[in-house]
Length: 218
Length: 218
DNA sequence: CCCCGCATCAACCGATCGGCCGACAGGGGC
DNA sequence: GCCCCTGTCGGCCGATCGGTTGATGCGGGG
Image (cartoon, rainbow over all chains, first blue to last red; front, side, top):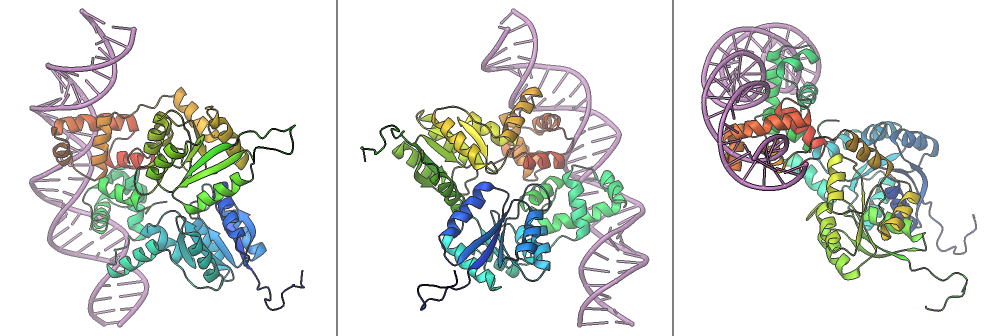
């Protein structure tokens, strides 16, 4: 194993990868794709966020390829946060959606890069090699969104406003929301007005619609 | 090619497959998975619904593996409808979501089976072989949902009610909905009442929430 | 220290919503 | 022929919503 036939090409240490995706088909796809790259080695697979956190700690891969939607258990953002908190393992998010909320939450959780599953395989390989060295890579559509957000900073909802929005999405009236959050109806209305402003709507139905589309709620 | 070395095992005609998914990673995964099965041959790949319809007509595969979410262009349901309309090619839906609306629409469009991407590879192989012979296979969670729906028949929204719901999801008021659909406000209110009943809610925000979660709208 | 963002509350008012009653026409199934 | 579903419409009324203005307290950053 240590002796190579071509001394002119010393085997570079391969990039060690941990896959995390709840879909077997996707994991198989990544395994197949990455198998064609000699300098990339998949050292583990996880089907849930908890599993990924545990395996990342045990295997200490160079890069974790992380999906954000993981079905049961903790989601990809939380898994990313826990893995990135260790400081030694880079997390490269590989997911389907490119909404502002997902991107923002993933980056805030410590992701090194953000790729879309529709990306070309070559881009994926390049992003993995970059991520192994701590360099950031963003898919083109993701980069576009990030830039757009920088140019016209969309107002971010405060924690309390998200609380209100969550109750609103249950279809509750102002009185019920007030009771649920232990505040007065007047306060609920104040928050709602600000939510309308920030989301660019003027009705509760519109707010719920935008919230669901932008994936602002868990 | 025609002469085989083992006359005792006459090569059975392999099942010819066309893949349709907008994610390169997923297509690669399926390709890799199916490559391990000698009796399954992938004869084509499509990254969009339109492409799938065209390739299905040209290649006449035994089975089309169809995702329902296809990004741009026609969706998987419409592609399924057009391919199944020919009557010669079986469509096996392979997707992420198992909501009632998706399942119902796919079956109604003529799908031969409905699998989830989280399914084990062996189930996928078996389903493909079944689909090639026109036999139906459903993922366990899908079958459960179908049975549940049979037992407690959820009221289905009528076309007009879906129209109303679509406008409602834009956050429009009754007057605007009425104008958009060329009917009176009274009619809008009547439809809304029935929608509330069927969805089990009593506010517009709740209706929008359920609609988005159940994927009742395109 | 002062300002600003955030969260909290109050009172008011017109517009809208939701529920209720009833009505009629067309189509499909029994 | 009758009934049920669907789609259409009207009126009524109390409850709710959305917008407005103004106010308080608290915390952090300059």
